[in-house]
Length: 515
Ligand code: KIV
Ligand code: ZN
Image (cartoon, rainbow, N blue to C red; front, side):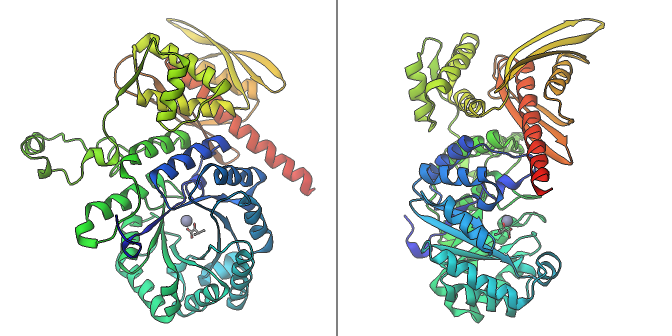
């Protein structure tokens, strides 16, 4: 194993910067499951959220803190309320970290913060000192660092270290820099602030120009020993640096760089699938490391080479990232106890009512397919976690189709107040079901995306649907799996509409309070 000096810490911000991607809204249980999997993956720090943003966000950070053993970070701007919210959210963390940030570029200070340089220095000192009163582990970030005047940034960083910051993060917030330039910035900063050598230097890169991983790697070469990244590279706009790419780059090219991470790489695929499923963000087939085609060889000449000697065209083993194929875990005679154990082996804690629902799903699928694989179980487990916190449940869906006539759907949904039924016609069963659901929820949405996939190959596979709707200028996503694709579509659409309805109602409540 690599020693402290040649190890890079992996700071995962899937649950914070990743969750800021449009349409992602993870419930507390989903956050806990992702956090547990990140812990198994071996990340050093999990950034669990931005505490001030809502009471629900604080509850989510607290729940994650209880569920994992690694360091849990909570993000805060430099004002008192933000730091207090972060402190509150970390009350149960075994190893808490407050991550405080303020913009340091002229453009942000002038137009966004409307603060002078002196104000920013004072805010940095205040925030880091206050955070330090709660925990010893404090990270400070200069937002938009790569467009910041270097002399001023040196002053801010010196202030943060003097106030007690133990990690200094230099983010490329808008994905603007290039590798050579990033090295120059970090080198210039280290020259001006030799105290940096006594703390951890961190990099955090966005992918607007497709350089997030290359820039992060340049940062490591320039002395950074923490990399901030997300699973599948999800995040604001074009996303963040992707964890799996950085980790496998350092592992595969270790002879060249001599630097490694503590990541358990054969947990990568499972983590990627879980995040993709719960966030509703599909992974592009040609995505490095975790894309469906990342280890496939199509061209005859490549296949021939790989058969003759795997290393001709393969620089990594598929097994090293956990792509060992989908083993059969259960059959149609397996009972509830075996299912619970199989979930536990995959890292999911499914009990009580969730287990009962998951077992019904499992039986339905097993009757159809006979053999159930770990991929099927992962999909069923994720869906049970979603279902647990669904504000609306699909009680029944009846579809009637006849050649030459519009399809008819009758949908019944339940919420905390009772059940309601609506019927509608449409251009096919899915359209009819969507129209009935829109009427039931009385929410003004427009369908923006509708994707159907299959969890495993074969005609009897579990179908997986993702729906994105637009409402009030924002997007809301819903996902579902079922052996019946119309039912999965209705369930996914109901989830997306429910997210939209709750968000619109929360905004209206806020307006009433403000009035
Ligand atoms: O991109 C960024 O600058 C951030 C900071 C909060 C670290 O996400
Ligand atoms: Zn960011």
